[in-house]
Amino acid sequence: MKIARFSRIGFILAAAGSAVGLGNIWKFPYITGEYGGGAFVFVYLLTVLFIGFSIMIAEMLIGYIGRKDTVSSFESIAPTHKHLWKYGGFQGLAGLFIMIFYSVVIGWIFHYIITSLSTLPASIKEAESTFNTMLHTDIWTQLFYHSVAFVWITYVLTKGIKGGIEKMNLVLMPALMVILVGMFIYALSLDAFPKAVHFMFAPDWSKINSEAFVVAVGHAFFTLSLGMGAIMTYAASLEKNSNIVKAAFWVVFLDTTIAIVAGLMLFTFLYQYGAGPAKGPGLVFISLPAAFYEMGIIGNAFAVLFFIALAFAGLTSSVSLVEPMVQYFIDRFSWSRLKASILMGLFFYLIGIIALLSNIDGFKEALTWGDKNFFDWVDYFTAAIMLPIGGLIMALFVGFVIDKRKVESILKPQLGFAFEAWYFSLRYITPVAMFIVMLNLLGVF
Ligand code: PHE
Image (tube, rainbow, N blue to C red; front, side, top):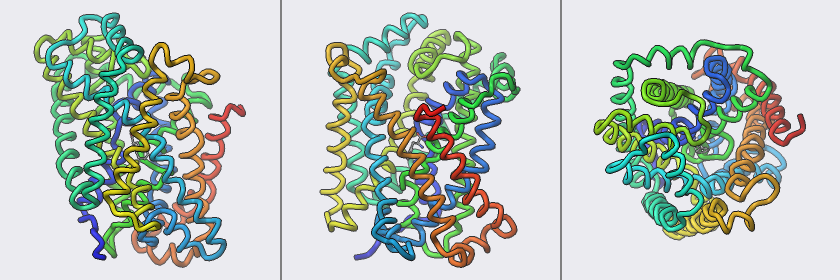
């Protein structure tokens, strides 16, 4: 069978498409808001540089050497205990689990694209009630758009690496960047821009505590798509003799730049027209539409464009969340791509309906355990447990299990004198950081 491979730019855009997602445009601004701005951004940038970048290279390396689905890659590369190491590859399941709520959120975004065409909420109060009404009562709207997301994502996956994933990223990623940069340039002209810069870059160290550190590490992982085999699966389709370090650099660079550009743009609009920065998860669904309303008719255009960009970011991440398991069933069970894509799609779609219902009044009660409903549990379980475990396994695998000479022979020419620093960070800094994050998120301290 001829294996389809990414073109060089196709790989970078697809991996960046995976990385740039709801995490950058929806989550990063609101956690920055919650943890006090500049100091948090500083810690986050350090984490991306020293932990995220290291694991990105490691994850790409496993895929690049293994050339197959994540389970087969671990199995074939491990020098001993292959039957145990192969479980490292089941991290791919995390992606399917993330999709359970990710697809529902993409559905909300679709809904907001359509409603922003005609109406925006006239106040924060109204915005809040619009959002909450949708979230807690409107089953059919959410179900409809969740279904649209499912069909779109599954269709792209059936078309494969070249004709589906690469093609979609080649169109949507540049479109997303044009929209964001366009809105950013507009934001530059507003009086509130310096305020946004100050908020995002002037550090207030009193706001930094251990929790902020943990959130920063966790977010660096999530936003760079690390720890669950998405990047690994894409890297399995890299051309031989590709420069992994360069590709990893570009992905990290694009992801970080887009998060910062999106953050500056959002905070400018919020300072100029809205109610200031810290508004939690509802930031883009509540505060932002209300700020756009103040801009008049151009606000509608901005809102529509913004939600389109957000949808694009979410969709390109989604295909990368499902592809590892699709690839797994193709490689290990000789399923056709069509069958694997549809069954994986149905998995997140159907369980996604339960996640959706767990926000709805009347169903909520039956679908809530402890302090979280099903939707929040899936989010928590993947972010707090699965991704850090995945990252830890990958760091240990590349740092201690694969023969150093092999790692060196591929990466030394690309990393040069930085090789030893990278290797050290992978062996010691990253595992310790991952461990601390996990303990914290599990509530140990
Ligand atoms: N990086 C994506 C985001 O920022 C989410 C994601 C996580 C995608 C893990 C793939 C793997 O939204």
